[in-house]
Length: 207
Image (cartoon, rainbow, N blue to C red; front, side, top):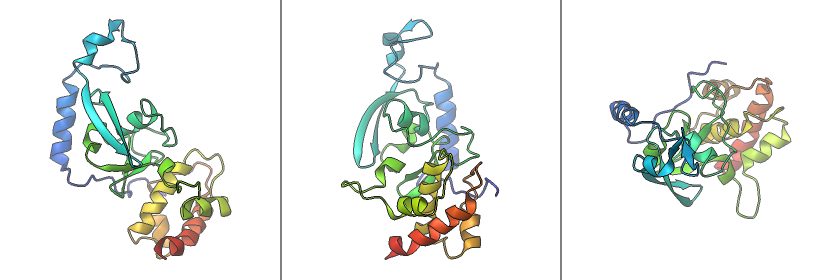
């Protein structure tokens, strides 16, 4: 499978605006991995605080108010200050799909999205798929039923992408599923089981 097919565009965000924001953020000195760190490179946190950007992220239906360096990715914000470690950091270069989350229902690679760009949008991670009573999402249950994972490291990203694949209407056949899941890599090669899981979950999600 090839890793360049997965949609990664953001809703209402133009490529030029993204590049402009990245360039602006790059002009600021690095403020460290997050507000919880007492010191960064030997300098008091108070000096760095003025360079942090206040951001409110809506994750799985809950708001999280943070102060982040402008270059912090959504992936790092999810894993570090927020503590939602289900979203995995794989290649950190947008090539493996392990960090896939949903942004306003569309799949994105969270290692490619600046956290500040996700403000005002609804982010859904693997932790937000199950029902409040613990009932698994049909896709989660299908992955279990079909043993669609081995080591499990890529599984959260696979499941998030699979949910979007069905929602996008790209699960009409095994070939189509393979095409539109090609941005998510599985080093354990559980691809046949992943396809079977998606085919099982599709009618339940559409019903």
